[in-house]
Length: 444
Image (cartoon, rainbow, N blue to C red; front, side, top):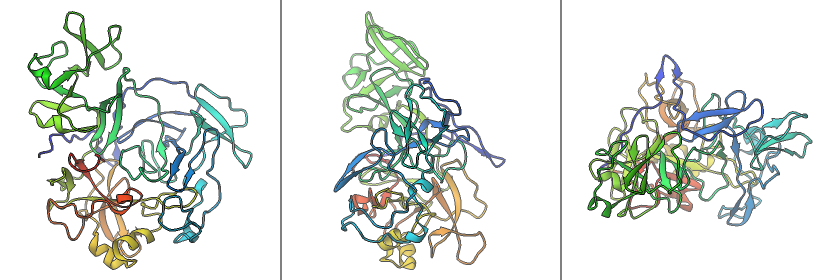
């Protein structure tokens, strides 16, 4: 199984500054003064405040033993430091003291509310809610809005991502919010490790294009359409933005995107499949390609699919962590407690944790390749940021400002640590960096 996706660089680092990410076409919606839309590498267009900081929501979610997140029209994110776990998802009962509680931020410190002026007025889907402390907060579609204390520049989504599989299946995680994509009815966009994948709205079937086609002509004949089904446009459909329509035969219209007719593949056996791109000349459609990893990274074909790998072919892992307090803060960033990771990876021993899950080293002169991939300095004994040159401090690669790891017991092609942790690693644990996982679970 070979990865057929071309990993293209869409965001460059030159002279210490990032080039602007390409902006996907989106539907223009009314916005209050002071807000605008920013392009991001992983989440497409997002709403941003006057400083360009991404806006997030905390979706209301039913967990195993309770419900948390913001209900419509109300913010549950308060300036209170949660000191105990709630028992919503953890196998342990509620009331246990959270590790490193003395340095744990309050919900509003981690997720500052987007406050509205006293004389602010609702605009379109933008409304205003009253907080418990008497201040006013902006909401979109009735869900309160926040920024993240981890984001520092326009286009950052360090705080959270809509990236499917990013630890959110069994945690009440925050998500970026933005305008709807400018898509005809019947299509959706899904964020993945490879980019913003175009799928059908019904069934989440992947959409493909062929190298043989032109903007006005489909070369897929009757035999071809047994497997490759043209995506038919309704009779009264109209071209819009990057979307056009061609006539396959009298009265039969087919959607085209960026001058390429669109198809689904009848042999795909799962949602959001990449299998159709294995056939030469056929490709999945991405509205935006994810930025490439550093050049020394490779890919590795496993029995379950294709993973991102280090220079030796060993599987790359992401560490995912959400604590089980009422406010469900993430604990996967170097700025948060490392107690959960050390406990899972090394029984509480940092030395053993680093031996089992070593961070991927970056060259001494490594530079960021995008907003998503950056070298950072980590003190491995604390798991926190360190100062370059200090004894023991490691220069390592990070994805979204979080170190990436390999697993000591893996050989090239292994993924033995995939799903290690709570709820198969989706709440607290390790997940392989899947580029293709056709035979295992769901694409990250």
